[in-house]
Image (cartoon, rainbow, N blue to C red; front, side):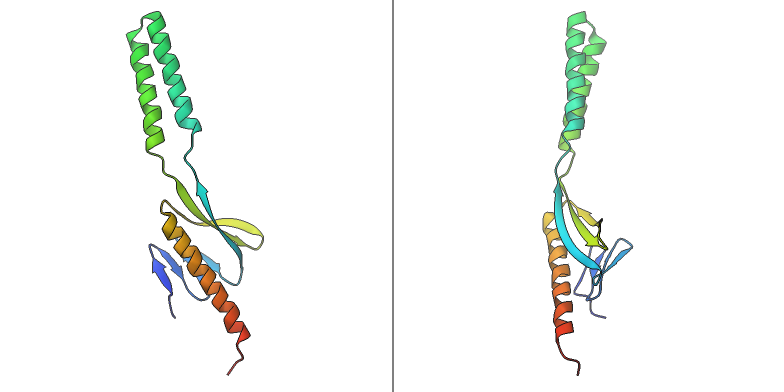
Length: 133
């Protein structure tokens, strides 16, 4: 059996997509989408605002403990922001339902997998149009 693509645990053949133990027969795949999921802003913002409030309360009441805890929360919010990655997901529509097939921080890899799948699906249509010998 020919493997047009086999990289990082993702295999695409002429008949199926296999990712991390999930197998998607290409005959059942109706659509593919690459979705970019941005960083979450809510959690770091809330943590930092709690830190600012604690810091302000510490200054207002003259409490060194509240100042230190407030500064620590500000740093935790900042660290939460910088350690988040933008993720890219390959969504496969099969049988009318959407399923996440692949998730990666590298957009180029996810798009390459999507292109290989589209090529394999297009080849499937070409093989059906050719007469049997």
